[in-house]
Amino acid sequence: MSVQIPRGTQDILPGTVEYWQFVEQKAREICRAFNYQEIRTPIFEHTELFQRGVGETTDVVQKEMYTFEDRGGRSLTLRPEGTAAVTRSYVTHKMHGEANQPTKLFYIGPMFRYERPQAGRFRQFVQFGVEALGSNDPAIDAEVLALLMQYYQSLGLKKLKLVINSLGDTESRQAHRQALIDHFSPRINEFCSDCQSRLEKNPLRILDCKKDRDHELMATAPSILEYLNDYSKEYFEKVQQYLKDLDIEFVVDPNLVRGLDYYNHTAFELMSEAEGFGAITTLCGGGRYNGLVQSIGGPETPGIGFALSIERLLSALAAEGIELPVSKGVDCYVVTLGDAAKDKSVSIVNTLRAAGFVAEKDYQDKKVKAQFKAADRHEAKYVIVLGDDELQKNIVNVKDMQSGEQVEVSIDSLVQHLKELQA
Image (cartoon, rainbow, N blue to C red; front, side, top):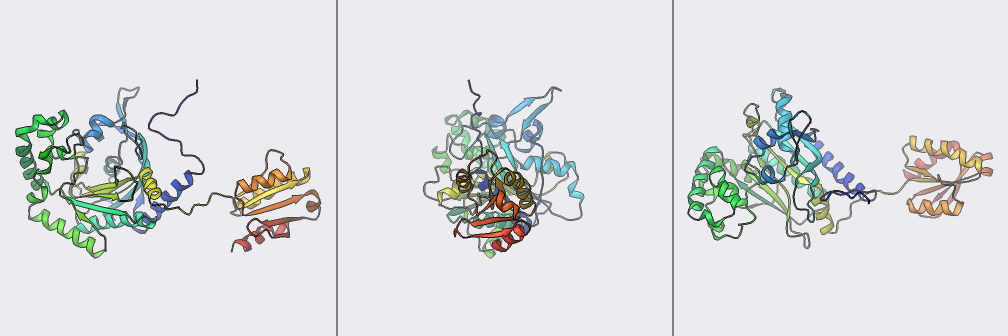
């Protein structure tokens, strides 16, 4: 019996992984331009971090976490998202005391959630996310959104829809919370058990329920925008103005509720409107979380960030028919004829690699014709032909596989010749 891959996971094979590398490298380039620095946190953390940071009433904590007990009896959890782990590291290493503020970080790595696998959704998935900690300026909200949009657009995506909302400050949320309780209480028995348990704990989460999304009370639920105090209104208006100044198109949706408990003020999602992308259109989500650092033992620190799925990003690129300019082939393939030439090819290939070329040779004693076929499969730009006779003359034949032209070059000047061809 063969061992199968776990459900909800995938092998990313050569021929596909190059696309992953491309979009991840693009993320790093965009973050460098915005002066965000990479951070790498552990794959697993103490379970309490996610219970306190993500929220005990969320589906993530209640239903989706991979939690286990180690040999020391400690409860640990594979990270289901990146923000809580990054803020934990921020507190652990006292980054709030550094001179340069806000602290601007990004991460790329695997996350784990026990969800029903479906198109674009896996139990192990890769997130790219950014976090800006230490500023209450609405301009940093706009900056985060600008980074997000620039990243997607730099990859060629056009059919995008940015949706934003304000969840208000603590005072605004408390007023809205009571209005939601008053709204849903008389008929809460018509809702699922999850919604019933959330009524008093976190009624805002009812609006994010997938089971009861079509219930008539959902459509008439009080909007958070009606309960924003003056500060929250001014803050949200400022964010919108900055987005207009940056020519970033957006839609305000008062029903937008993020799935994690730590959000306040600005919340947002980015959707794909590409035909055939699928029923679940969300590509990315994020928002402001001014109380998160404090909830895990740090000082009162404002923050904002987003996270996106690399898997869903690649699906969106496919839906729009965008082919990324990835290079899969090799620069040079060395074909040999004769034992002496075969021995010499080992050092020639090594010299080419040391000079920065992607080089390959035969390791299976194939005939010359089969070696040329292998060069074609490797999509080699140039084939370097070396026989025992050429070796005695210290020369090789360099064939341009696109034009078919072939020239004799001394082995000593091979690297320089290839550099001139690629210049």
